[in-house]
Image 1 (cartoon, rainbow, N blue to C red):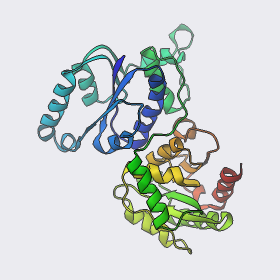
Image 2: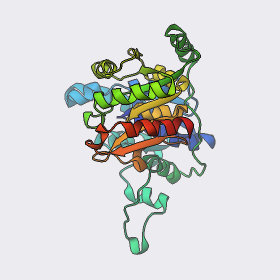
Image 3: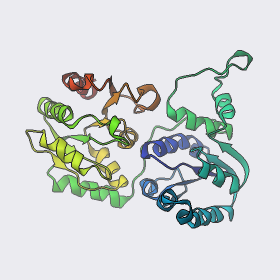
Length: 325
């Protein structure tokens, strides 16, 4: 089947859509992903999606009149093709309109709760509607199930381009990281309320590196450089700042690291896919690990309140469990 998958927004959400799509790719379906231009670069070397279309939605967000030509152009380009199916993993008005506009024999919309829950088999007796707790990736997989995909999700990393792999190798050599255990630290998140305060994070990183003989490497996303530098300022030993990196470059660094310390964030999900062991901080006020935690074996999540997160010593113990089981 020739299938168009639509998902914009946060990096982590798109990574989980990719992860669920590995099941469809296993069955030989031809998959195309429509997503944000910046996120699209992450999958340039990966075969799960035979094509990735990057769409710059900045104009659409700033104003309907300014962004309308961009939206209309994307819609017409997609409509020029014939699809067996289109899957809207977003459920927003714009993606709903795109899914309806595309020429497809079948459409699966995230907003179709009935279809998703039936695919999960979670409808109760007499049509009762339970509130099951499951990981976000299961919701994405449910849409593929509606399209007839029966294979399980494949546990594999995102395949990077040779240029990205070479860049990461050169970065490791240039910064003197070859032969060392590297703790990759991601202090950012999609919203400030998901971020661990720089002071306790810095103290925890300092203790982990001291106890485990590791070198800290701090990464960040757009607009987070100041946050990264503030975390660095709380370290006695100098940390390496990764600099401004693209998403593929970030994935390349994570693939080479020893362990990752992170908040609930997009880079966390990239790290889980790339196979680096993760020690993550989730705040009870905003996140649930069973719904959006890192997928895979060997990861640990410190699920605490904002007030409890000041007691960073417990997180240091958890990080030791990640490294040594």
